[in-house]
Image 1 (cartoon, rainbow, N blue to C red):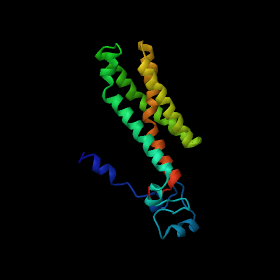
Image 2 (tube, rainbow, N blue to C red):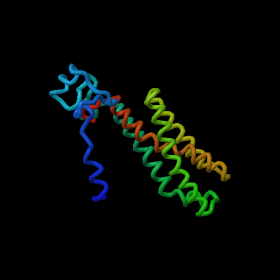
Image 3 (cartoon, one colour):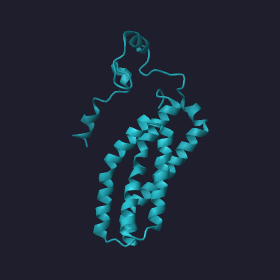
Image 4 (spheres, rainbow, N blue to C red):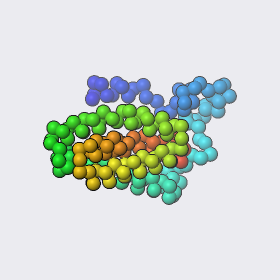
Length: 178
């Protein structure tokens, strides 16, 4: 970690604005640069302070939904092999399913991220949660190996909700304090 991890973090900056770029990486015009001179992040009218954010029901709903999603997802992941053996698979078969789940993570993240950039992040996150619910219900009622494979594909969507959640926090409460 010390040899690789710390050096990788050295080029990180507080915000794109702190190096003269917009959040999407485009260069600012001279007028925009002069506006940025006083601050490292543009304070938009929709930027909330932490105190203001904690006073909204939207924050608490998002927190509760995220906490429940993480709890369920982590519990299933930690107990993945025992659950799959309980469902009738051997331990090597369960290990293969677990490795396939990990392999599905990258394309699932890319797909959901693409959709969240194109459509309503709230709706994309809601769909991720509903797909996760369907996956868990399928896991509970699965009797055949093919059903577990379908579960695996559906459940891979659960982890993709993390980056959408962070983007949604910025959408709801602004970039300045979050």
